[in-house]
Image (cartoon, rainbow, N blue to C red; front, side):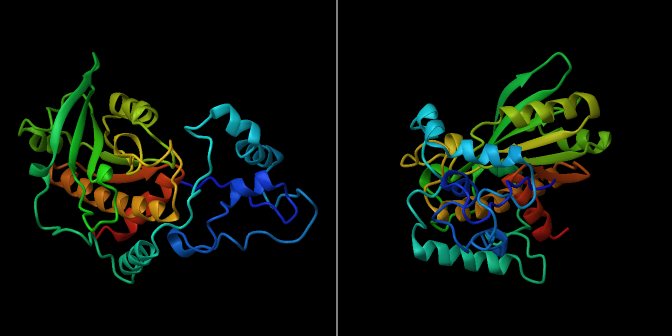
Length: 289
């Protein structure tokens, strides 16, 4: 997966377009340690470094006053509109990140990797179609219980898309069936602002029906049923919220990989688009095997 990035604008670009590329509260801190305040150089007003005029136009329209007025309160304010958040939380999550991405793949930092996880997941059927593809919703307590997540995000939710011929995940027969069928599986992580399972489920549904690939679709903290009450719509209000979201996504993905192994799926992959693509690479980097 490739990170799709709106190109940075040089100094002198319109404030609306520049704000879309670099939120005003985000300067030098972010996942992966990249700088967000050094992308702007001198040059002609409005000139783009890389990319096309379409990218520039999208960035300008996306953050324009007209767009904010059109979409209203749900999506009408900027990301990180309330600043950095708790400095102690930023420092804590930065330390976790530094430990996680050291020289050795560390696996989970929050739980015992030897402990089985199948019993920790509760299941609810969602749908089944005439092609035999079934969809189940799972829920478990997030491994991240260090106070970095809002209470509404403490329980992780995901959907499981199973190809035809595989029994229910709570039947006690899934491991034998998945092993016999040599069923591959993908974990699909969400992009920033993805509230639901719908878009990703459409893609994963086709994989299950046409290629026999099972999929786990994880809902991000701070979105959907995991959205904190104080958050307005899809826009994260603090930089610390993004760090909390990423930390929990990595840990929850590691738990789901372990569940897939316990159920004898394989090979196993992790994918995503936009933010989900970045998190998928992080999960792959720290997963021990």
